[in-house]
Image (tube, rainbow over all chains, first blue to last red; front, side, top):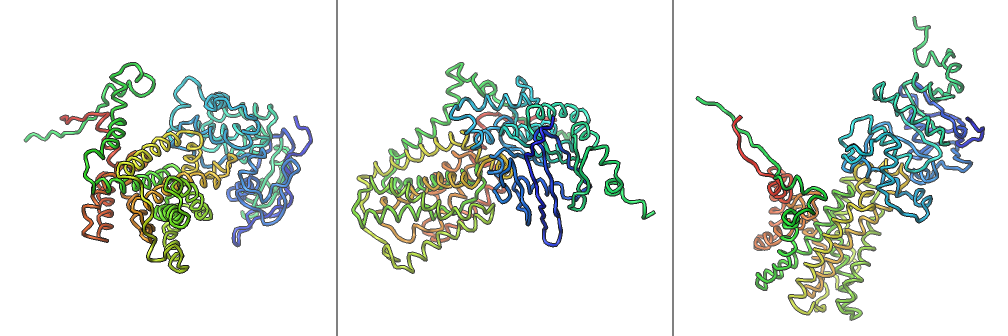
Length: 253
Length: 336
């Protein structure tokens, strides 16, 4: 499935908050069409990495290139318009708007406007179509309910739908499985596979390893802001330093 | 001793259950039920001047200006998430532009008012735009401070008549024109803003209020949209200022008075935050009330505060939401 062509190149980025080194010298390459998992214990700097790539934080050093073009230092909306979008770990939908109206906002971005090239049909219909693809029942009341009243499973889907509305090339999923029930996760996995088949690259920050390994062909382990392993899931999880990062070391006994 | 308890039971009027949505088009009765409150406001405002004497007609002209400011305040606070206390700045900038154009260049009000509305809104937006990154209370503080900046700039430079102001500006032809200009402007603004908040632009602005990070992640430049929102509110405020300078035929530093920033807040809270029509109604009630207490001078600010406090404590939903509920529901006491 991998074409071997890199879509995202992260080169030696570092970020510190005051005295805390959140990310130090992380390099990472994502190939087009891949699903790559980013794992690591709490506080390892996974979300910071997502924030750095999506432009919400500015790296202290290092360069990030997306489709060979430098994006580090650009504001988030520029990066999103170039086709790199992200989900948020904490779901905060536009709670006063109905679910489908939530998608009107990304549909008004310059990226989508350019793609539609002046053919401005009914955005509401486009929004409902996207929601149907992502698992909202078109004829039910769910897409028309205020987003603030939706259950978490739907909110995660809505967050994903917000990304898909931008017709992205790369989606950074920040813990999209967390807080979901097993059945909700199993229904979400085919959706993500469908995204991959349509040519979208996915970078998934996850704590739910078993579910992640069903999808990801490659995982990157981060601990204390440093990349400690990179490779296929089985090989990575077999490594002693990864086990130590997750379970703690034997030496203390 | 019988100790039954009572509770208030609220029921939707059956007609409204059917009225929400297209079904209302089924019968004249239901359409009228929905139209009546809207018509009451429109016809009420248009007919009001006929029942007032000269003095109160003038007061209602001022009420119209406050209504525009309150509408702008409500729009920015509830639909964009910017608490803007810059009402006095909008009035001042609009008023000075139209007054100066009229006094120094001899342009008639018909020309100066549109120029001051658009030009003033552009200038106000430009002044406010560096602060648009600020959120919540910080934006409120900066916008509250800016009118003072205008006042001291004019005093220090000694321009535009300095502390004396400029008098003998052209006024509008007669009291009827004066009144209907502002009343029609209020109605148009209300209509436009109410439509706007449900259009795409309005949805994006509401999105920014709910979660600005997600809007940025959706590829939208939030500062650009905030600028548009401030411009829309400034248009209404600057029109009010331009109109005010021609209403009194005089301009001075009192155009930057704190009243223009404070009364709209009281009117918005009184009318119902986020209802858009509520603040207009609030301003129409509050301005004559404050006029009746003119003798107390600066104590009037205390009145606004008391109104604010009273409504926040006892009727936080505001007049309009309260009336809306009473209109669509009926209540009765029930034994439990």
